[in-house]
Image (cartoon, rainbow, N blue to C red; front, side):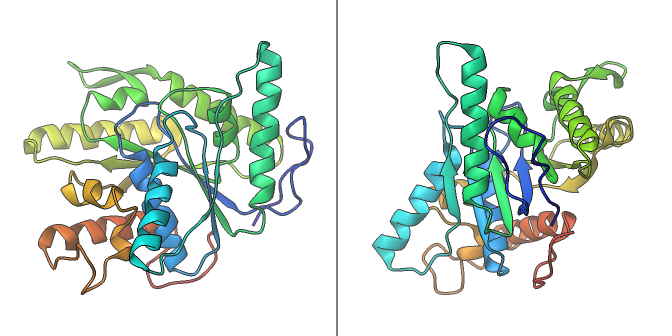
Length: 288
């Protein structure tokens, strides 16, 4: 694991040794960020990693609700569910913007420090930019951006001429990622490994799919990310949320377990994402 640069952020100093940080980020809602984060968390726990989690979407708090549901289900059912060490941070609400920024930074670094004994920290971010979003992206060793598989949602990455299928300019979100990546490089840290996952893939016509793939390939080269397979539009993900469970928790004989093609495909989707970031299922080797 890399060391944190103690001089990079004003306020409380960061620990000398830090966990590997995976950030799930996208400035759009409804793309499956929290579902992705929770499956990453439980998948890593099942592989034997010590995992911490931070929810900087403090107002909506979907990941925190997911984890609360999990704890409640474990208590109610007696199931021995693996749990991350979790922190939830809401944006500061001071009278002065500079004071708010300082408060956000202090609380964020405190959460990172409190989780320093973990091997991996997974951070879920809101569907809008704020100071905590920028802080989280600056810490990302790996950034996972779930993207709904449609031309409407590609604008989170770039402004696109939909008629000509041509890239016009990077989006505000992409510019923010570049800015945080440049800060990391200046501070002597490794650049962000940015992974865009095509989430909620639908059965649209083959030509439209080919056009989306072609455009994303262009964007990957121009913007600087790599593509990974994502999660399909499956009811099982929504059903599991209410109990705080993931596909990794369902074994034969468990409530809700079904030997169905949909469940099998969903398991493969999650395994493929872990493999894409260097965590093959069945392995317990350190992250890259």
